[in-house]
Length: 264
Image (cartoon, rainbow, N blue to C red; front, side, top):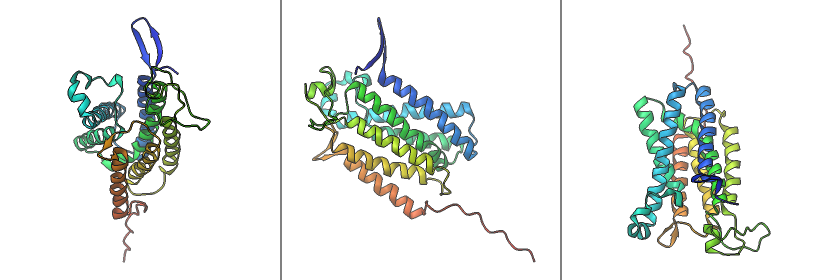
């Protein structure tokens, strides 16, 4: 495995960047199908403008989150803060940034937030799966050493190979990739279920929080919040908040139109 897909002189195309582009295009196509199915008043031009905003806000949020949790390093090396090509994007920060940007956009355009969030939920988790393949090619988001037969020895110039040279490690990024794809198919199947607006997006948050909490038990380089793994803490908050909203608003119930009045 190698992080670069193509190298022609000074021109380098990295797998990680290609996965971002693929996630953007495939996700944009899928969310377009859902926008039309739900009858949302969003043109194709507005859809791609919204997705571009959400993508850059997600990257910015993911970087700010990662830098904040590693301030001892970045405070001493401020030139590294914008160097996202060296790695360092946190998915929880990306979700916060993308959601805030989405909230601003729908408020400006008077689009129902929860309806659009439901339309985008399957695309988001599928995009995360593409991203994890990019992590695999980079040899990052890796796990601890393992004797299991599917342990992988990463190249010595990769983050995994530098931390554990010559040792097979859990391919934690592939664990998450597989689970993300499973969540995508579940959400895609449930998208036509007659539930209230917001159910699918909040269910996505719960399922991904469980997914990330599980995978984090294998990861060798997680962000920490005191003595705790930050993904475990943040995922617990996500489950409580999203689950609480589903229960409070009874979002699993179908929307029932009011009964027509009888004449007479």
